[in-house]
Length: 195
Image (cartoon, rainbow, N blue to C red; front, side, top):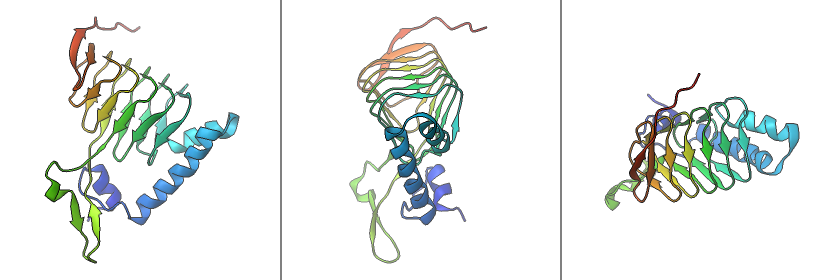
């Protein structure tokens, strides 16, 4: 039988009241307090403890919000600007040299389109919000413009630019510029040749 945490990561209906999940949420809130208000070595230690994996030279410039933290993995030379929210109820993986502009939102959680399937009833009779999740994967050399929203299940390839204000609901192949609501391809970029 799967734990509630395993169900969450598998994209299945899960109970957020589960003690393990609540402990992770509490831990995340405590570390975010240090990340958003601390300085120096204490802030860097909190960043290392908060994320599931961090590469070298991670910069968080300004206020940052997430739920668990342990579900977020970042590569080398990642820059996250202010007022970004990572709703990491599943894996969020950022490759190397990813730039995230201010006010970007990454949402792994989702609810049913059918209103009759948005709430469930537990064996004790209490009602709960049914949430399913899917990971967000972002490749290398990606620039996410300001006020972008990316939803769960999206994979953004390498060498991609996402224009400001876009809402990304589908996968984006390598070497593309996308923009709009919903985001669509507006330009093709030449492939990178890194040595």
